[in-house]
Image (cartoon, rainbow, N blue to C red):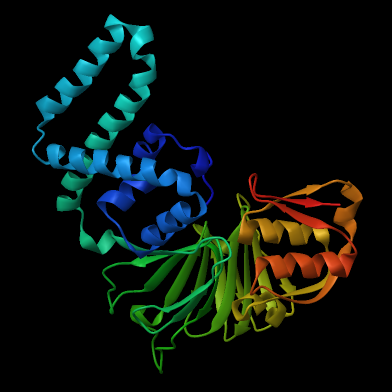
Length: 342
């Protein structure tokens, strides 16, 4: 996911103050390990800073385990007195001290809360980086293909008697395991995808959910689904194969249209299908999936229209194919993570 500050510009205090970094050091998982390995691979200059920041956080974690409330208060009081005694001298070191102290207290709070946090509310999280596609199976047998720059969450303690629920940010293709046989539909036979305030309710079917830029689009390939805005019963609509429902944030009305669903879900097979799509929209898709921001030397280039099937096995090959098709030049600016188009 996007960072508010580029990681290759991080100083020691930035790593210590980064919640995602703290989580990796204290509660690592597969997604976090992959993310920070990729950071160190792309920006080797961060390795010594990451090593030092990890050592600091781990040492503070040991100290925080036995740090009582009064000791935490003394820590903050000590920092405050140092700043008041010599503000100019302490100004530069304060940021690091503040981040370090915050990390200590944060780790302490996490340790305390984890003791009282009911396991049924914890969520398992699976993420993808730019340009990465992952396919995995949920505990009920549902197969999910997660597109690039996306995140899926589901209950860590999967209850086989409760409604199956997942939460999506980004884009994913679902092939839901059909459990209902006959009679009254039980809770365990329902499957609900939450995307912002839109709920997608299914029994057993295959569909694509795209939740980006405050717009949720659900395209149905097989089966039947019901869409509804949370808390607005009158907003509910049913989709049939070949239909797509769209939900714009902060609105209650859903829009239903006919679409070529095989084109929309082609990404999971490593392809992108375009049918007379303006380059400006293609570039938005590229930014969402690869993280590159487009810089058009001539704004009119964005009106050029693209058609055809393009492989996404390599981002370089994709950019080159688009450039050749439209008769334009696309150059990557790795430093600023931009595409210069002319």
